[in-house]
Amino acid sequence: MTLAATELAFRAASVALLLMLATSLVSDFRNVLAARLATAFALGSAAHAASYSVDVTSPIPLLHAPLIALSTGDIVVFWLFTRSLFDDEFRLRWWHGCIWALVAAFSFAGCVWIAPSGYVRFSVTVVNLIVLGFIVLAVGQMIASWPTDLVERRRSARVFVVCAIALYGGLNAVLQIAAAGYHVGDVAETVSAGALTCTVAAIVYAMMRVDGADLFPATAEPEPPIVFSQPATEDAADQKLIDALMRLMADERIYRHENITIGVLAGRLKIPEYRLRRLINQRLGYRNFNVFLNNHRIEEAKAALADPAQAGVPVITIAMDAGFQSLGPFNRAFKAVTGVTPTEYRRLKVTAAYIFSLLESHRNFEIG
Image (cartoon, rainbow, N blue to C red; front, top):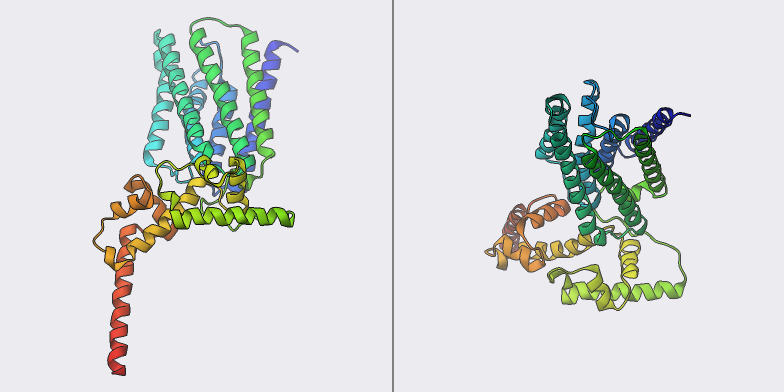
């Protein structure tokens, strides 16, 4: 088999695997944002597999320009995918689409106008620096959010998927910058296509080993506890730890502490982090440590907002007293749990209390 035929086979295999992955995600998780973004990323990666070339010395066929633009814009989709995968509060905004459009448009312009005008190295360097920038953002998101994930198998799969994509994308970007304007030959193209196929196959295999409901949970809300059968002695030991954890939450209100982490909490309970992570996930039903903390903070805030004696206390004061660092995250988390903003919640409680007092007064008047 010639090098050209081998390269074509690798590209075809990558496209087939990516289309299979996209079809599976659409079929099973079409209503989950992270899965929809993963589907879009898989389709963009298929465009990459069909159009990518280390050799950028020859003019790019006009028909390839849209595929290359989609391939370049896919790095923005990758960043958004990692945001949705690691941040339970992430929501798509209109300006995310604008960023994607700008990156894809610049890539298209580079193929059609900039590179043909003699600025090949400039076009290739800028595009790949953009790619490297979004890879850094994605990896940073993974590092920042990974410790709060309580589902062990999902933690491992997330890290592998993001690191594999970042490693392949980063190496290709550096290689293209270094080779811009030079003819690299068929061997390099074949090796690049083979590396992509291996990366895609490894990612598909890793995702198939994890329960899709773990990787793409339909909601960030805590679910009913997941009960596993275990020996009575172990169950009793776990229950003692849960009771101790709840005392820390209720009596000491440790969730108020700044920068509280699962490591700090495990230290207070004198147990390893992995065991506390397992307890909160399997016995209390939470998938994310921050959601666990925020639910306790929101319960305190709800009590304060409903208290007539604190009617004049600003919402920001109540939020920060409960452990939130700013008003924005508090408002989003509060509305996600209650369905209304803190101000609306306070108004509803005041109205309900006023109506209740009127009814009580009327009842007392009739009795008297």
